[in-house]
Length: 88
Image (cartoon, rainbow, N blue to C red):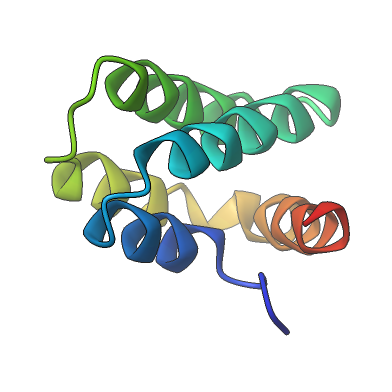
């Protein structure tokens, strides 16, 4: 699955210096998460989007926190990441 792991994709984009593309992906993640009321994921995506917009590429801690979202949200996270894969 090409975009199945959105967090990994964000890491790659940031490492490659593609901050605008990473910001766009974080924005998409925020929107999709908000639509299905996955507020925990939406909050972390908002943080990432704002940091990327400011040109901050040192986001390892924030990406780690996104990956540690409460296990009860795993189904929502899978759906979000799958849906983003369809969009990209």
